[in-house]
Image 1 (tube, rainbow, N blue to C red):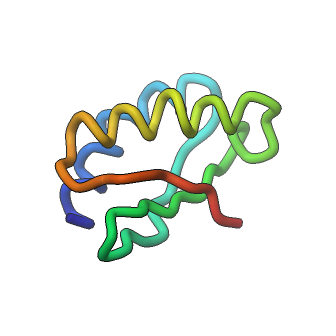
Image 2: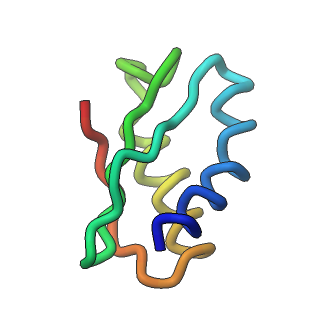
Length: 74
């Protein structure tokens, strides 16, 4: 599943990069929890949690079967 998540993130990255940010895949657990690190302008942005849950999590759930949740790690 990790490879599928990474591929899906490639589709999401241009949107983040347009605002000066990016995302790194840290881990995918066996139960479908995706751990990401937001970088650049996304790190510490007041809207980062909305981006993470509404943007990234929704997109990953649609594109990768088995993704249950997304969480940010430092």
